Image (tube, rainbow, N blue to C red):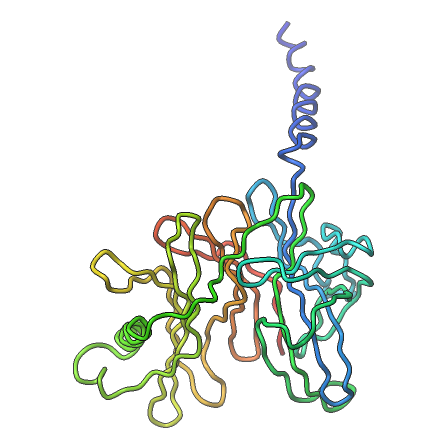
Length: 315
């Protein structure tokens, strides 16, 4: 009897796993990518690319399998539908809604800064002038001089038709809020006392977003303080207003650097509830000297934590 049960266990387990992975809930998967629109300012041409970021399976963020193989240079992200099948459509999100779509075309490797990533060329109706995360890229590559204007957005596809909500706010903050954020950042970076009043922090980004469906407003901010001899101190943070009216930290990184190499910092792409738990996740770019990495921050309790890293690129 016992021996019979033992023989049946592998079969029962196989049937159970087949049921789990074939069920509608388990089969619902989402893909997160970044749509990058590159404008070559020298040759006056534009191209669009999809960079695979992560999959969401049953609410959990997973890496896109098969990133560049360092031994043979091959790319095989078989879990990314845009790589495996031309014609897959991704919705493009920005500040509270869908602003367009992009269609996967041909996969391959493409230069991102000084390195190569597995990317998918894409067709899109979005124009370079559309809002998004904008940056410039200047320097040398194997073909000679390059000068690019880059605009990036979150691109999203799902197998079950459910659409996440993008929660970036377009409404501007009050001047009193901006002043309070300046004080918060200076206090955290410089410290208290008379030194705080003498130093000035340059706020690069102040981006409010709805952190949850309950309507709580959070704010992503980044700023830099310049010190003697080209020294820099940079803050990247997510804050909320506490019960006492003051801003409280939900995520914070403070790094030292210099004018030549800069300092490690974060840049916000968008705030979106990817996993459907009613709270926004943040898709960010982590910048360090000649190194950049896409990351996803998820809220756990009163804090944001890094739950996904990759892909990375740089020299």
